[in-house]
Length: 216
Length: 123
Ligand SMILES: C[S@@+](CC[C@H](N)C(=O)[O-])C[C@H]1O[C@@H](n2cnc3c(N)ncnc32)[C@H](O)[C@@H]1O
Ligand SMILES: [Zn+2]
Image (cartoon, rainbow over all chains, first blue to last red):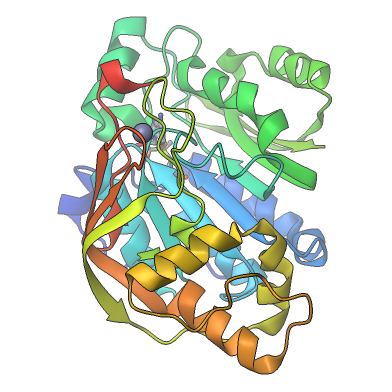
């Protein structure tokens, strides 16, 4: 059992600005825990979490892999999230390196074929397109869930980059909901040469959540 | 925290700024030194991922000249200790990173780099 990261330093006020870990977060943790030994054996050098929010997932990955074996990079468009990610890393003694940025923008040039573990629990909730555009612009709490007409507005941009990001034995874990059209995601990624599997799924309230794992 | 290991991976991504957009120049930096766990295997494994010249240049900008100008073929303990310190123990707390090509300024505050661009600057 890998303990859930200690988040006791985060307060109600933090969660007014930053996504509070919820069922989707915990499903991703469970998927990583199931793969813990494989993840360790793959000896990753670079892990990158997109949309790190509270920092819960990266800290958990750090608990699996250890504080000094891997570089933990993360991005989030929300500056409060970067701050929380940093603090959560400190609290859990994992050196996290949060960057305030959209998706992989400032890293793409240097991380070509270099990311060993890529993680994204995206804003996946179907909304009006304008709502998602506004949320991306505002970079606040709304940006943690508003995903546009099929909930794929933000995820789609990353999906097109995955092939170029992953190292030769890199892997990518993605959280999605049913409305995101999982078979279509898998097909598009297969066209990019990436095989995938649904590694976990769970119903939580109105959401039917999935974790997909893509391998090069 | 912006350490030189992260700095070595960041490039300017302003629209149409595609050449000479790396490495970002460090400006008005305030530093803090914090000890990190030494891990020789990690350092060895990470070396191929580094842009060596950029690292040496950034190290000089923060006042550390312990690294050789060319990455050595044989790495010994002393070299690894220096590399460890340069990559992982020097923290840039405040300051900015400036694009050598388009001069865009990316601020660093409380140890976190802000790489966001305005809508019209995105490539
Ligand atoms: C569902 S939350 C997940 C947060 C955290 N990883 C977790 O699992 O609890 C989605 C996160 O993605 C961030 N986000 C939204 N759009 C983004 C973008 N374009 N680039 C980077 N992060 C983004 C949000 O700010 C939010 O923190
Ligand atoms: Zn530039």
